[in-house]
Length: 397
Image (cartoon, rainbow, N blue to C red; front, top):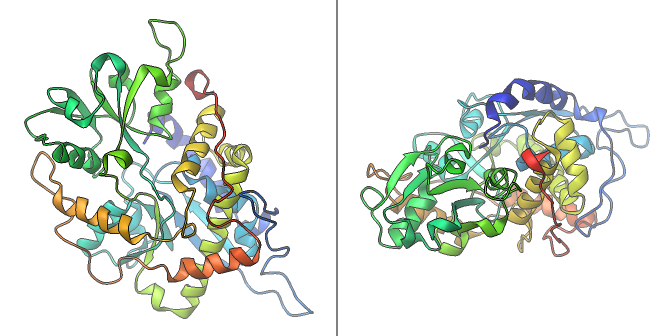
C-alpha cells in the first residue's frame, strides 16, 4: 500500500516490460547473507556437447506495484538466478483491482503469486484451488502508529480514538488486538476508512493509522514536522506492533495451483523457481543497496532512500528464518488461522469460517530448494544477517 500508487501505476508498465524480458538476458553471481557464490553456469547451457535445455516460461504475479517489498524476486531476475535454474521469468506488478492469489487458480494467468495468507485462505475457502508453497515473510509488517501527543501506548488506549484501517482484509490484526484487550471494534473506537496514504494521519484527522513498517511508516518519517521544520523522527511516534501484541498473521507467501502441483514437470519447475527466488532474497540480505538499485531500475519511482529503507525492513521480516527461508512454521500458521477464524470486524464478519481443508500449504518444494541452496554454500537461515542503518530523506528521495 502506498500513497504514490496513482503516480507509480502509470510507470510500472515500463517496469513490468523490463521484467518480462527473458531472464536469460541477465547474468550475475551470488554472495551475501553469509553464503558463497551461486551455481557457476545456467541450467540451460550445454554440457559435454549435449543440446541446451529449453528454458521454462514462468509468470510471477506480485500483490502490489513494483517496490522493494518484492526485492528478492527482482534481484533474482537482475542477477540471472532464474536463468541459472532454467527459467524465463515474467514478473507482473498488481493494480488496485488485482487479487493476486486468484491468478494461479484454475485457468489463471500466473504460475505463482505473492499474497498474504489470510486473504489467500479466504479465497481458497471460496473455492480457489491454491496452495502456499513458500512462506517468505516470517513476521507481520503491519503497525498501528500514532503521534506521542495522543498517548496511545497500548491497544487499550485506542478506546475513544479515531482509528484508521485500509479494510480489504488488512484490518484483522488490529481488530484481533482490540478484541484481545477487551475493546469492541464496533462501539469503543471510531473506525474510519483509511486511504492508501498517510495524508489524513499527518493532517490530524486520524489518531492511530495503519502502516506497513516498510512503507507508510517511512512516509511519515519522510514528511516535515511543522513544529520543528525538520523531518519527523521515530521519537515523535508511538507504534503498536502486532507481533508483540500477539495477534500477528502471516503475510507474503508464494502460492501455486494445487492441481498443477501434482504434475511432476511443474513440481520440478516449482523447486527451480523457489531456489532462484530464495537465492534472490539471500542476496538482498547481504546487498541491500544493490537490491534497491535493481528495484529502481525495474520501474519503481519511489525514492532511493525510501526503497533502501523498504529493502532493509523487509529483510528484517524474513531474517532470521530458523527453519530456512520459505518454510511454513506450523505454530505461526495455526495462529494465523485461529485469528482469521475468530476475530470479527465491526460488521461481525470473519476472514475465515473455519480451518482450511486439504493441502493449504506444503513445505515439500521449499525443502528441496533449500537443499540445493545449501549445496551452493548459501546461508538459508539468515544466521549471519545484520540489518543496516538507513537515513531517510524528505519525500524518500
